[in-house]
Image (cartoon, rainbow, N blue to C red; front, side, top):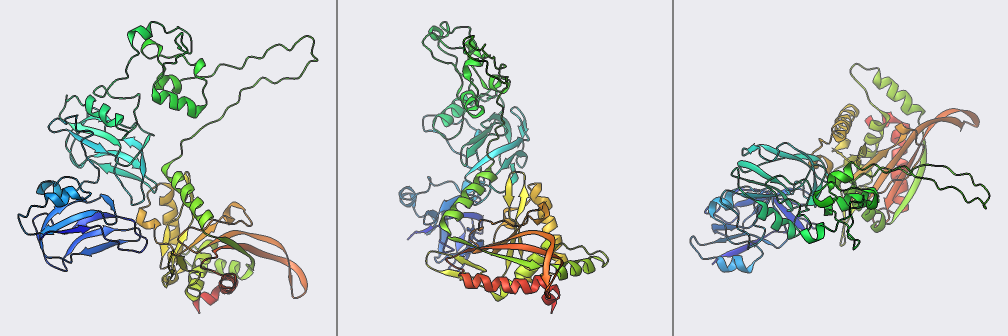
Length: 539
């Protein structure tokens, strides 16, 4: 009897999983204990073994595709067994052929609607899910244009996700017939991205139907094979007044949906825009090329006292939120309003640390920063205070014995946190090299998602920008984050005398669900010993 295999819950926080790879193909024999697939969870990529024996009859989730826990993953049964009822009764699509089941499909291809036939050889390419947290993507650039020949394996476009900008290659060969998103535009995963097929194929009906179904945004810049903008009906067009607003006598404004959206985002008064489209319709290029007229001042009333007036024009720039910025906003909001933050502030004497760093940097081919010293000191202190190195879940608390420290790096679109793993086991030079490498690649958007996952504690340093003290929002699921300020020269009291000293202020933000005040204070005492006496880190 056939057995339905659902997406397993491989971690306590897992809500959906991505099939990284299948170790068995449709038609293969499966023994109990065989590894069926590698499943990427919210924590790691894990092997998933079979608890049943038989033949793999059906694969419901292709490599690279994601589905929720308990959704249909595969079916195992007797060779030749009829499983149509199980497939139709589950959440999966109709059973594919063996070749279809075995083929990797990082981008979903589908028929937009039952009433629109897809010509032979034509493939609808949708926005791929390029990371486990990706909900929508932005086309950073197209490497192919409409009319170009595309070979399997060619890079179609660069897609900006919530984590990085990644190359997206084609798994089909043919001619690029249609582009559903222009450079800089965004759409949700599985929205229409492109159509590939034999040269000269008319795909306008497919594109129109797909867009009408709400799966992808319409654009003015449609290629020649794509549906063109619909002109106003003849009886309406003849009523259009030749004014800048291109408004009919009944007050109707003729404008494409994209142009209207762009005008709203830029704050453009449409009555000042002259349309260059058919019958005076305002289209995308009219908004892009629009320059507002200078503000005209009116003469003051003769009966009123003269009032000083300034002629000017209010100006501003608007920039669409990147995927990274959207995700940062979402996660920081969730952290701030779900984790009860409290803050512990300390000030450390940095005289010994300054002398230690100077001495180390005099060694050949050695260069360490104060930030490297802070990361190393935190890593060693966390080994002694696992409560601060913890994570909170609804039904339990996880005390981590490994130390993976996230180091906040400022980039153009916001903030990313690459992770220095097993930081307590690394030397200062190794930590410095890792942080420098991560920071450079972060600014070029070349970090991989795996290099930004798994942190157990976070360090954020604004001291190099001259900031003396600040507070940070916890990078969940961490329980704490350390804010590091600048080293300041100031008068200090030593042995009852006022002398010139150097101090550094730090602020530890803690999640009160996992870290009590006394626990956080004890961690800072240990950290103080390491930073004020760096040699203690090597004893």
